[in-house]
Image 1 (cartoon, rainbow, N blue to C red):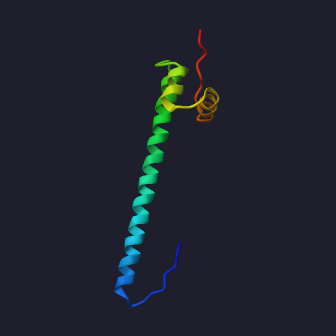
Image 2 (tube, rainbow, N blue to C red):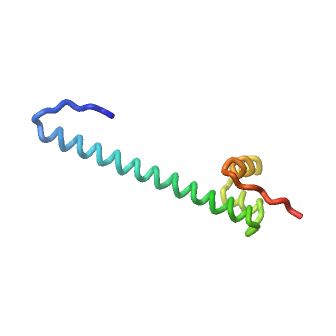
Image 3 (cartoon, rainbow, N blue to C red):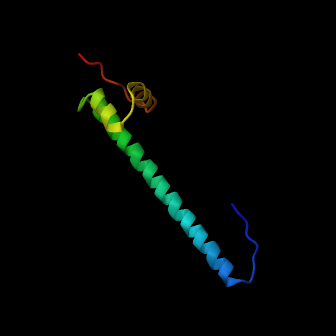
Length: 84
């Protein structure tokens, strides 16, 4: 964490508060975006694993190559169903 020298200048304090708040907002937005992306992948992996739709549709939904999809799905702990 950054350390700031305490000064008696109220403008510097306001500026620091604004920077801190902007940092919080950016961090929150980034975390939200990552969480939504992770949730989307989970939804697709579960749907493919349960047979709601096939691997090809899952690949299309996540815009991944076959290799990327299989690798990420497996790494996330899901199994690609064997097609009959």
